[in-house]
Length: 215
Image (cartoon, rainbow, N blue to C red; front, side):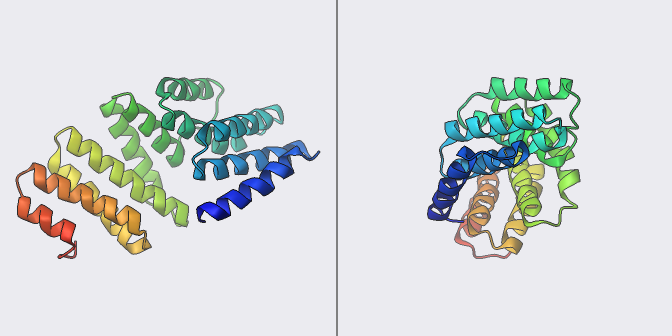
């Protein structure tokens, strides 16, 4: 969906959330509106929507449904630079007994850890997320898999593990190319080129950027 479509979605969902409705339906509407607001870059408003949705699911005693809005809450906190709050959020949720072994949760928690400079934890969580995401069949799952490889590539490069970085970026590039995601493909190619440049392979780096070889 483009920005105009997300704007329309937010308009409809915002109106629907104000109408009297079943609490479960209201939670669903709030979460979807949070998603629309994130797509529009309105992270503070998205944060409020997803927090409200999570609170409603908790009140309704449907713990499994809380994970989706909690992922939205954590993502917004990261974008706003509030990594400590995001970390405390997951610690509180863990104490409440929710199953946090899902690949998407591990990926989000890896991003929180990376933002705080906990690179060993980030690597461990990314690898657990990758094990879960490799079996994904949905478009969103494959996109998350590509993103996880790209993040891992950046982490390995930053911490000096250049062969591992190349492997991760090549996986990210392949998945992006197969999905036709032009933006993700460009980011993966830049990652590959960056590693080649750092290890002194300037010609290979330039060749990748120019797209003259099939990887």
